[in-house]
Image (cartoon, rainbow, N blue to C red; front, top):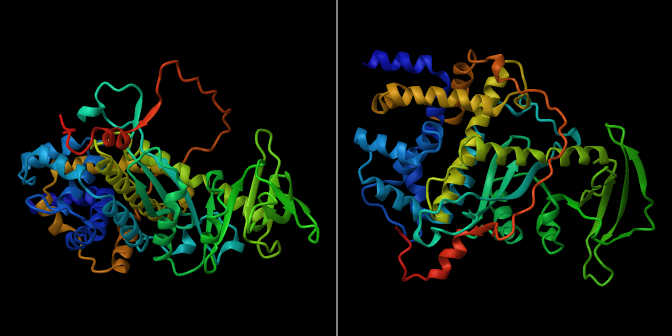
Length: 467
């Protein structure tokens, strides 16, 4: 049987790599320590935290997002020490602090498994080499299930919570997350804690890139503490007073489009402590692109480079799309905001894990990670893990995986194991321009999205929300 299991792993190199990486990053003592430090009022009895994490992993990468299939298989195999409903109950009570700590602390462990940075081929301008370019953006967890009693029969879609995520563009990994149980929560109150979380694990200066919803003059001093800088999209509705002592400059970007850059103050004349910024205006057919930045030196940081850096902000939207549609965040396992936010945290880390695999296989195929489709790669990972779940023996698999005591040895093993896995099937299809679709209007009487957390608050703590 041992020889069969060994041969099975050899024939499933992607599954073997994912299992080994997961075992290294989420080893049981580390998860137990993380839970002990961030559990709040939670406690452990028969079902350990690391067991729950591995059950959810299998639900997302093996069972297509079905928690019940994962729990039932574990119960059938005798590896689930409690009833299935108790596993759901444990998931429902996980504190938000635990979800945020999981992303913030596991992210660097995964980043240590990436190939050397010069082989990643990240298309960021050379002028930004000394800055850790980091995008922040918020995401509502949509399509919450209506299993809880107060939610049954409600019209419209439900929101399961709000997460604010930081994406390190050069590495292509999610490196931090803040969350709120209210899906209708504004992004801005979540920024300070996320910034503090990312800074605590980043030694060099950071360039924060954000979209228009982060135009808040009270927030910008936070983003420029130390040597950090910001690059934020702005609206024409925001007043701008040009500095008459510093003339405006015109230029042409690599696509042949003319832009204007100015220096001055944003905000009305009565605004106290108006920020002094550099503004770059790129006229576009639908909506002008207006960027404001604390990087005032146009020689050291050319406008063309900042326009390119902001264009790469789209990477976080692509991450959200893949986490939702490919890693099954659209299929929510739990019913409470705490459960849905924890699932989101694990999905972001699985996205990071796939990014590490993608970086290694791209190098084997003499491609850049940007040329490899994460969706197609994840599909093959899923197929190999499904085969392992059906034929493999988890107890024997753990003993057959190689011993890699540190990140360097595991990184070298990944490079060797994934060297022969490359296939042209993973090459990303060329991007084609698509005309924007017109969205239909919400029909009369439809209530749109509602927050699960707000609904549960109305019933009070004395009411039982379970079925």
